Length: 102
Image (cartoon, rainbow, N blue to C red):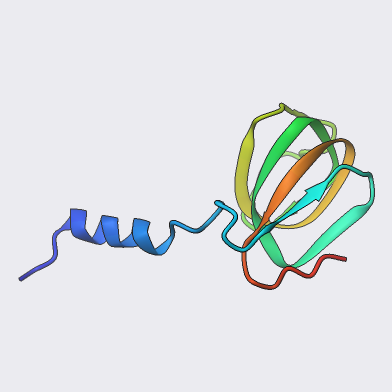
């Protein structure tokens, strides 16, 4: 039986359902230190209004996020490796089982 487009879509959803839902754990950040994740983060949820000093993402382009306010409750997605807050707090969800943060 030939697979149709919907079956392929549902298979991809099933394979990727753990992305961004915390299946690899998370890291709470509420300080102004620079945090680097060896395995990266794939989602960031803001627990209060937050401003970055640095946010490094391998799959984002465009203007800098520095000095922009991200509102409480917002979740952003990407391939993040460095999070450095100017103010605020967030939960960063690990992208892999490598949960080493320096």
